[in-house]
Amino acid sequence: MDCIFFEEDKIFLRSFLAEQSFARTDLEKLLAEDGFAAEICADGQILLKKWNFDSIKILEDKSVAFEGKMPGEGKLVFEPLFRIFEDQKQTVDKENCSEKIIAVFKAMDEILKNAGFDENQNEDETKKLTIFPGAQGILVSEKQENGSFWAVVLPGNLFERCAENSKDYGKFQGIFVHRGLEGLEAAIFTRAALAYRAITKKYAFCQENLEKRQADITDSNFIPVEYEIPAVTEKLALSVDAGLCVKRKKRIIPGERRFVNEKTEKKRIEILKKAMEFNSKLLEDFFKSGFSQNQGDQKFLERRSEFIKKQAQKIKLGRFYQRNSKKIWGSVFAVIAGFSVAFSFNKENQKLATSMGLTSEQTVQTLLTGIHKADVTIIQEIAKGKEAKSLIQQVSGFYVTNKQRLAMDEKDGTLTPAGWLFFRGKTDFWQYGITNLTVDGIQTSSNFDYPKRKDKKTPLKEENGKTLKKGDEISHEVSYNLIYNEGEPIITVLTTTENVHLVWNGKRWIVRKISGTGKTFRNSYSVKNYKKDYLDCLEKTGENVKKAAELLRQKYDFVPSEMDLKDEVPYMIKKYNSSAAKEFE
Image (cartoon, rainbow, N blue to C red; front, side, top):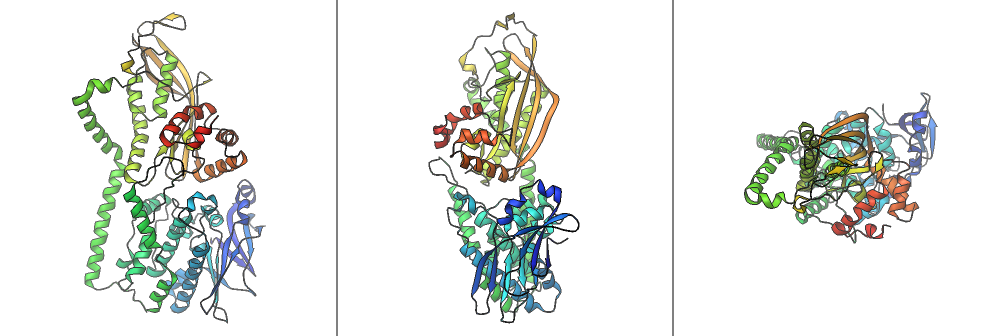
């Protein structure tokens, strides 16, 4: 079912939700979001104005649709760009299709020119918009008597949200958008995906499955325009290809200590500049040149085949690395550990954590601190046995994922959930860590200041008035939220209650078993929505992190406690010179 349909002088966008389901969403808030309507005049002038839906309608099947009035005077006949692409492959009237496509890209040029994007675009939340929907959300009219066309670009975020509810999302919308981009980069990517389809009559990323498509987009797994169309000009081909390879800009926050790989940033800017060289005139010249879409001569076919072969090998190798990164990093760590043992065994051992001199409760705190910090060395010293190895594997997975992301320079790093709040929403960091830890029902710090071997603590003699002897056992109940990113757009929250069993080995407490209580819940949340809600809370509280967190906690119960925030203040000041941490009371 198409996302768009028309009745008389009205344009309708299906929400693909029944009335009751629609009422439980915030879609109605997007009713006022602006799209664009453009009249592309025969003399080359482009008259651009904002356009949006103005009401909601309940359809006969009890589903909800957004309703808006067609622009222009009189009744215009519109059709989605998606349909024109389909006609382009079959119709004999190629000139009419080409004129409509060129009209759309002229409108997109004008929209980008007036969108207000600049080098600091990511500092402004209002510019973090998907201004271009896919080919289903861009409408173009038949040619008017005066030689003009009308184009309507539906509100990008609203269209995206509605299309997500359709079983045909991948086909109608997903193949044109990069879900990891926003603002200017998102617009450039979508324009390039549409241009690629217009030029080659193929989709750059044709996988309708979200996971597979995002993998292809991340790996730039598409055939460049020059290997699809022999006669295409170099400037057009390179600008479209660059648009499909754009990366997200890393934010530099004034007053915060941040690090950007200069080489990677320089390359990102070069790709973006090349992508921005695309314009509708290049496409118009291409169509007017009477281009041939044949497969080229034998040499062209050989070059194309060789490129595809090399690209497949490169991507296969890269994905092999990603799938087996834990084993690879494990081997690297093993080698490094071997050298460490050979050269500085005693010195390094003195820096390791220990539970010597700690009560059983403090030992549990130390273990949870190791999980919170993804510090395998802490866990290794505190927990022993088969379950400890399993826990170490899990934590190592998060640690290696973070190191791999940093090594690949695709993302900026990872913060604890409390540290993330101190950036006041102006960060692309992922999150990993524990919030709201309790031990035996009492709120406890997940950032415990544990002793090290070099401190040479003396063993406890007794605990809770009882003399300790080898083999004594004790259990503590712990509850906490473990928060971590699963890919770019999602944070997962694992809320769990567990029993931690410890044994006294004659000198110190050792964790021997961690058993679940059946009270474990896993929930996923949109990073985008979580960040938006946090920004709303900051606005209501005058940018006060403590008060904003309290307000945010009313909607998300996993938000770090005041204790979690206080624990993070010293690190945020030392590492990032965080002004928000300095102001925290």
